[in-house]
Amino acid sequence: MKTKTAEIEVKKPKVNVITLGCSKNVYDSEVLMGQLKAGQLNVAHESDELGAEDIVVINTCGFIDNAKQESIDTILQYSELKDQGKIGKVIVTGCLSERYKPELAAEITNVDSYFGTNDLPELLASIGVNYKHELIGERLLTTPSHFAYFKIAEGCNRPCSFCAIPLMRGQHVSKSIDDLVKEAKHLAKNGTKELILIAQDLTYYGLDLYNERKLADLLRNLSDVNGIEWIRLQYAYPSGFPMEILDVMKERENICKYLDMPLQHISDPMLKSMRRGITKQKTIELVDQIRNKVPEIALRTTLICGYPGETEQDFEEMKAWVEATQFDRLGCFTYSHEEKTHAYNLEDNVPEEVKQQRVEEIMDIQQGISLEKNQTKVGQTFKVLIDKKEGDFFVGRTEYDSPEVDNEVLIDAKTDYAPVGSFVQVKIDRAEDFDLYGHLVN
Image (cartoon, rainbow, N blue to C red; front, side, top):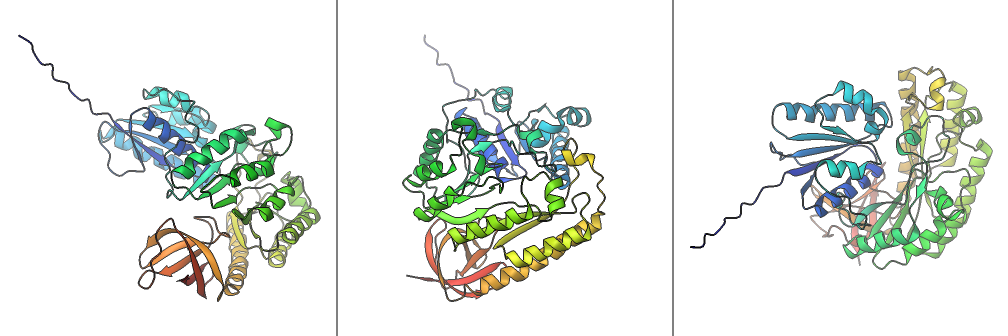
């Protein structure tokens, strides 16, 4: 007599990935999730629905004080859930773990494993998944599918005194043009229309692989990928800026006339101490050259207030320069005194309240500049990519805006319909400091 053997399906645990920090971390989490899915595991991103068998992977940030504290608080939150039996395992990866693994392991002992930024195969193995080298470009997007962060290189060779990135990410390593084109084609096939190029330093791209800067060549190759309508450049470095990328920006309609170039300061003593490899005069000349070559370009920059030794005169010089330069987009941060950086040897002698006050002064100036620039757009029509519907509005961006950090275009959903992920033509009716309001036109 034959007996039928019942097959019992074993429920696999869900892996919940938590992402902290910058767009580079977003990309890394997406790659991790793609590998987990290929390993036949259930994957979620920042899910609230957790079970006693589930595994939580926290991708941490270790860049500045606030980010480090957020990462530590998140680790503590999930390790407490593990103690309560509400989740099965806690695994920590990313920049904070790369930088402070021994200290974290000694202080927060009920985390199952700590991994660094380059330990993806080992992390996967710890939960029973083999790393698949062939998964180039195959990741699970955590952004809306119509745009994707697109990392072209890892690490950084720049000597900036305040920055701990090389300690956490290592030296600059470019990905090959062939691999990046393959990744772009995969994304386009799955509905991605905008690539946001990221790296610690885009402009260094190719020097390690091809012995010359190859960002212009990469842009041409990516521009040829069917379905990619916008390519956006973030995180360019001013010293040794490859001007030929501006020629490509002018040649190719699908390369956004947008450049994010963190300049950090303008006072010569500050630039020298920061080890930026550029002077005030050369910075001013570079901005002028870029604007002369691509007059309609939107320039975004980031500045630091309260760097060691920053005098009132240094700060006033920066304020005057911000007012004179009229950046389209600008972010400003207080200096964070980071161990093992070159600047850590200097005295962190600007009081925290002074740092904060200086940030507020810069951002007040920028708010006025932004309002003035936005008001000139009233009556004009722009191509807008719709990111989401929020309340009574469809919310999108022009080619002059990156997601999360820049201006938005709001369209009244009661009178117009603009599908998320679509490009629409919008005539601007009204402008505020950081938002534009408009209606659809044919």
